[in-house]
Length: 253
Image 1 (tube, rainbow, N blue to C red):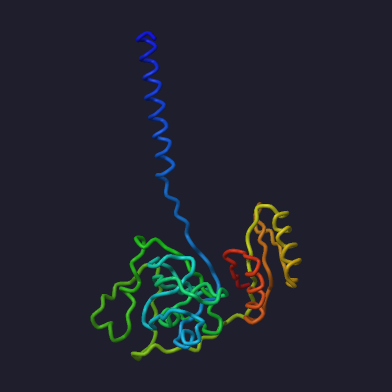
Image 2: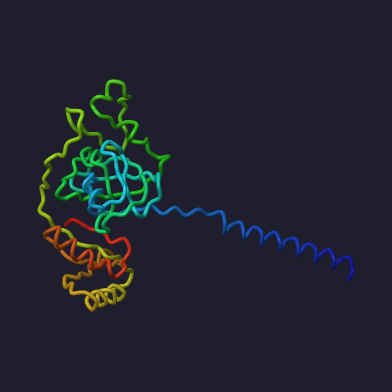
């Protein structure tokens, strides 16, 4: 082999290796962050729930902490009351065992702070970037703590007075709208795909109120309902769950 062809071979070899290494690096570097979001009913923690083994871990009434099955410990979340749009920033304490009908378990303090209706505790729970918000636990305080706390407002987080006493008390908050919900199963790009899933539900359950709604040009929402009571809603939700649908979502009409 002449020196001329030898140098051409070496150049080709080095260039090829460099491109291969660069390609491998590109496969490793990208970081995809998926934001978790789910609206549904939350379970407000009480010691009775723990004693009855409905929840297998304890929550302190005063903490801004939640249990959530899909999120890791210490994940920062935003809890929004869907009936009045009041929200608060909290932290996932850990995963916990609780009925799958609920999308989370929250402390009594969180419920009171956002004026949650205990008979219709409909919330949106979202994971958020911890670096993009001021942690609400540092700003939200009880009356006895306000004398020494920094009272600077927290952008994007609603702060409400929860009680004039030192104890957290359940508020008698009623919904201004009638109970009216659907269970969203999934969104589909093709209507035929939604129809296939609808046929499966009808063949494997006795659920009849199955709807396909065109929400945009290429988006078809498959849902069940509507429901006028939480009892009937919970019953069909559990039937849907047996079909292994992921992230079933409740939507208030």
